[in-house]
Length: 348
Image (cartoon, rainbow, N blue to C red; front, side, top):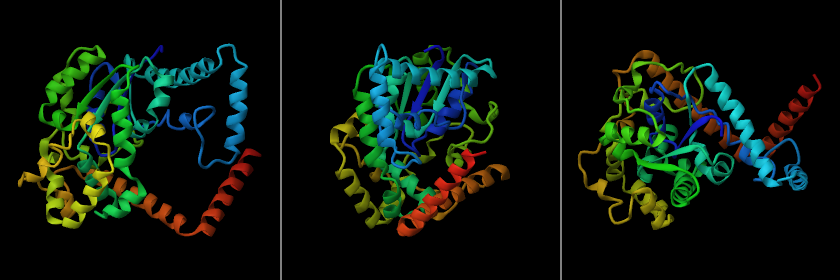
């Protein structure tokens, strides 16, 4: 691949935004909000299906498969086309910056890693993992008011991300480096030095002060809730999730059942073996400001508004989806209107 590309993958609420901000502070790396360049591409053509689309995706997939078989190198030509798509977009993104490395941090990539490996075998992959219960608790508190059941119904993070990341780490074929969030915040300089060495660029410890500059960042997707409350990696979040579980036996029972569904080997691969999985619960110092609905009041007003706006947007998305799911009729109406609008817009 012509573009020097680094893909940072990990579950939502696992610290990927913080690590992206640190790496993007390097003079040679251009980062930015989550672009989702690859997720739509992974559900087109011969690779997979689209669950909802204004065309017959099954017929389209069959047609593309037949077409691809007529190409000189068959599927290899298809992967080359996907690769060219990425090279153009990432290359143009770098053009305006003068930097030499493009960093793409999109958590959802973790769910389509086998596809991405096919398209971008020369990219460098940074895999960030965090204690699965810490990830899920933060997700439920941030977007669902601490309602674990609704959060898991909306997005079963453990079921989706634990096996996907574990399988990717165990597979061979592409270069990768595995970093645990807990190690990152405990020894940030040591971890980023290891990442920079892996990428092949000079170590710059000043990048840990990621809040010192904007790096040309303007809007876009990404999670500002935790990262804007600090100016550099902090250990504050290491055990704060345990306080809520100690105070709520029902929630602890709920997450224990979620963990029981996971493959112990996957947990070991991610760095959280069952033998020590619950040790953090023995630390009485853990506290979670989100349980009491508090935030870092030292953050500037603009940052506090961004955090509030992001949470409200997520709540609106969740409530909207729930409304549609409760009414099949409404879902059909919304779908019909959407398709009709798309058809009408094509006429102009």
